[in-house]
Every structure is written in structure tokens, then in C-alpha cells.
Image (cartoon, rainbow, N blue to C red; front, side):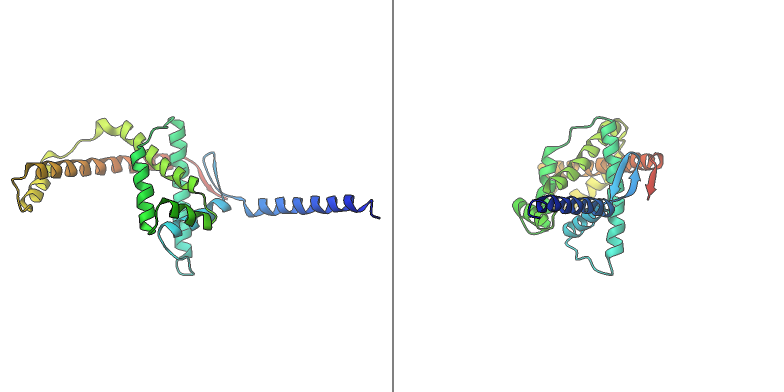
Length: 215
């Protein structure tokens, strides 16, 4: 009987592991397909948790479905962006903007970068995945700029009016350095608006062309 015990023990362990694997597969099933990309229940749960943490929101009966809807949209959007970035071989992005995103996210939660890592770790979320999420958005922005930079046309008269209004509100409107800064800020804002418009247009075209299935 003692000689048979180890064999019996390993049989039990084998079946327990098999049950665990099957249970894991059932729990982590594919719920949405975005072209060749799959979104699983685990992906959705992580996204719900991350949205709640980054927005400093407690999930309850009243907002659960709303946050779930936001998470689904966020995952689909990110998968479409990643697919397009991969197709166009986009690897570049603004590293300084990545640092700004990390800093702003940490500040919003009242912590530093290390504190942000700890918050994510406590909630079984990956800091690397958050960075990857930021990088996707920044690569997308770089791609949009490269595609549409020659199509950005600004309304000069409208910009001049905005600059004039800002300059007139200055206490000392003879300070040329402040005036130049105002001009630069307004022109950059207008460029950002145009790029956002092109970004939305580009994404909408992709969204219509990619097959999205809810399984």
C-alpha cells in the first residue's frame, strides 16, 4: 500500500491540474474579436479595474455597467490602433511625452512613479502594461502627424483674432516675449485640433473596415 501511494498521489495532482487548466480556460474565454486580435474576459476585467483606478472611482451597482462599457470601447480602440501601428511599422514616439503621462497619472492619484507602481501591484495590474498603453497612444499620435502633417491648414484670420484678444488682456501688452509665447501657444493649439480631427477621421475609417465580433 505504501508503494502505491506515490502513484495515486501523482494521479490526484494530475487531475487537479487538469481541472485548474480547464477552469482557467473557461474563465478566460474570448469575448470580442477585433480583426485578428482577441479580447478575453481577463482583459476586460483588468481594463475595468484600471479605468476605475486611474479615474479614482469606486465601482458600485450604479456605475458598474457604465465602466464596463468604457472598458469595452477602450479595448477595441486600442486593438485597432495597435493593428494599424503594426501594419505601418511605427516604432517611434515622443519619450518626453511618455514621462509627462507617467508624471500626470501619478500626480492625479497623489503619488510618485513608485507609488503608482505599488497601487497597480496591489490590484494585480502590470505597470509595464500601463506603459505599453501609453506608448500605443503616442505611436498613434506620431503616425497621424507623419501622415497628415502636410494637410494641416490653419485659418490665419481666426488665429490673429485669438492672438489679439489674448494680447489685449495682458497687463503689459508691449512685452514681446509674452506676445510671442501667446502666438506659439495658440498656433500649437490649432494644430492639435487639426491633428485630433485627422486622428478621429483615420480611426473611424479603420473601425468601419475592421470586423468586430462580440462572441
